[in-house]
Amino acid sequence: MITQRPKGTQDWYGPMMYKRTLIEELARKLCKTYNIKEVITPVFEHTVLFQRGVGETTDVVQKEMYTFSDKGNRSITLKPEGTAGVIRAYLENNMYAESQPTKLFYITPAFRYEQPQSGRLRQHHQFGVEFVGSKSPLAEAELITLISRFIKEIGLKNTKLHINSIGCGECRKIYNEALITFLKEHKEDLCPTCIERMDKNPLRVLDCKVASCKEIVKDAPRTIDYLDKECSDHFEELKDLLNELDLPFEVDTGIVRGLDYYTKTVFEFVNDKGFTLCGGGRYDRLIHEFDEKHDIPSVGFGMGIERIIHFLEEEDVELKAEESVTLYVGILGDKVKAEAYKIVNSLREADIIVETDFMDRSVRAQMKYANKIGAKHTVIIGENEVKERIVNIKDMETGVQEEVSIDKMVDYFTNK
Image (cartoon, rainbow, N blue to C red):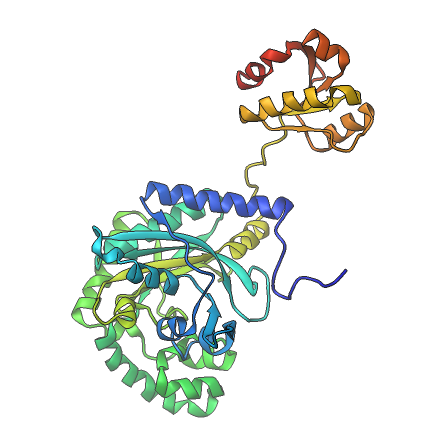
């Protein structure tokens, strides 16, 4: 064997692939009911997109990005998250010229160089939505209801919505002054990274994962105490909407999210063990950051598919069973191979799940294989069956056999 897969990646097949398929199918189904259209952006972008959008002082940009120079000596980065690329596509393709709002969803691979752990890999996959063009808290409510439905329909339990507001640029300036004053009093106990961030982007200190820093910031000033009237009214309207929609929530002033583009609302869906299943929020200044000619409000979320699978397994959630093979067509003798496969093909054209023999097994071995793959019915095609145009279809659960015309096999299975 030449090599193994790189650390922090995985191969998708079998039951895990089926679970991922179900998650993606549910995501697409829900987005269809919300009239959210799919978008696919490149797996790699120019590095500056993430530096400007995600933020140069974030862990993602400073520590986790896969960045390299291409053959044209351009700095290229594998996408660490989905939002920046979608907003770049929105601007570059003049989507703002269409009727607004624009609602886009994506299911994409993302790449972050970090220590692999349960539900978090270096190459992982994200389901996300970007809702562009509305400044109304109803846009946040739209995404929160979608996520709530997703979590309910996929079968996860004991998950609660946590919300916070980190304000706009103006009220953030006042808050940052108060936060810096507080952090300077504890400077000696902060980690080196937080000391560096304290002056450049103090809000990032609140997101530090170092235990000593987390303990210090428990007593830090709260963003919601420094909101101006517009930001405060926005947050209150969102809370009123969630109450009207009977969506339980907790105001969690510890949520600031790890990316610089967030403004006003930030939210997470957290399980009863304190793990985040999904996170998002409003980013009203991101488009202006990319293109100063435009100032368009937006809101979005991202959900890690591997993390969802991890918690489905942890909670022993049973997803709907994969559809079994409807019919196994056994082949008796080389002379009837073509005719048997012709029957297989005609059944498949009617969207019936059919399998047959490709290994030149004996009939007994074929029936053993049919049982192993969980085929609901079996049939043997030999010279007599081809000549008489009649077969015996066996129900593998009851053992009952029925005589059916070869020409009526499609009707037999489609009418069941």
